[in-house]
Length: 112
Length: 114
Picture (tube, rainbow over the protein chains, first blue to last red):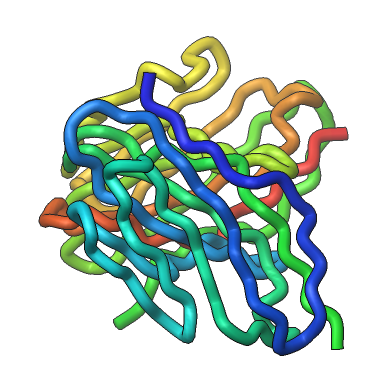
């Protein structure tokens, strides 16, 4: 079945460090891919998305490129801030009639 | 534009008691979802509505869980009776039903069953 795998956390980085959170997926067809972020005590917020191969989603300094050849959608940020501390979820969606399948989440802590 | 609204934000009940959660989706969003999120895990779909019709409830434990979306807007998720294992965050999300079908989430209701 369809699934999403993320690198295990927690990830701890110093402020201004480079961030990569790996995400790979298994799915038939051509899913849309998403990164959601969940800050402590809050619901999930859509961070960025990509709907087809080679698309690059970007928002708030975060980027991810839809790589169909490697079935990956890795999240990157060049310089993290303390305010980026949160849990990040990679997710896929095939059509409007399929549920979103989430990865297990990766917790990020950024220390000053 | 207002986001997805959920209430209550927190609920503590004793096992075997009933509990209900309410969700108001983004205006104009016809698709509504209820998710269960256990600690340290990603959300898992419980039920999906298209307007007032439940089109996917395959993951809803129907012996104790029920949901409704009267008039195709607000929705209520109920648990009766609650069990200790139901302690989790219950998330509501909505979608416009148009590509790329992204979902917008509410803040969730954190349920603790004692």
